[in-house]
Image (cartoon, rainbow, N blue to C red; front, top):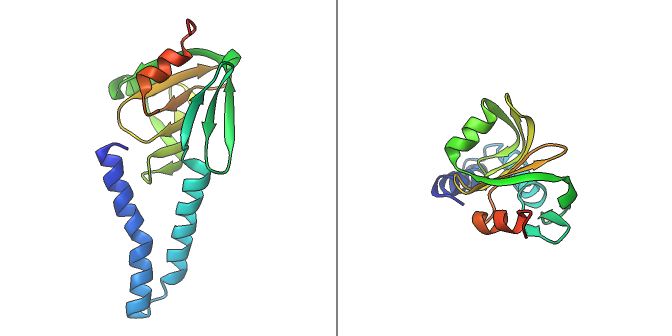
Length: 155
């Protein structure tokens, strides 16, 4: 995670703690909202935040604790590394649909220039753009240059 996203995550993780502590100390009715927030955080961790991206001979696999998604290489038309300025230029105005702030941004990104983009980012640098026949993907793998090389047609 980038320092910005790490800081935001730490602040957000304190929210259910504050709810539960306030409920205990002040007898305020905040235990239910605290439990709801904790449940949403668990859902984000288990279903929205990828744990790894795996490049194999025939596909890229996006792996979460409770699910997996394969992008067959035959569906990939291009792959390239982008910096933050290039991402902004590529997508234009955008709105996220999914998780944002807690461990990164995950889900769909609606873009004025590209429509719906699958987005799984946990940093503010090292972006990888994957063009597919269906829709583009925006990822931040641990080693973006190596990831791009592994997906390049010459490999």
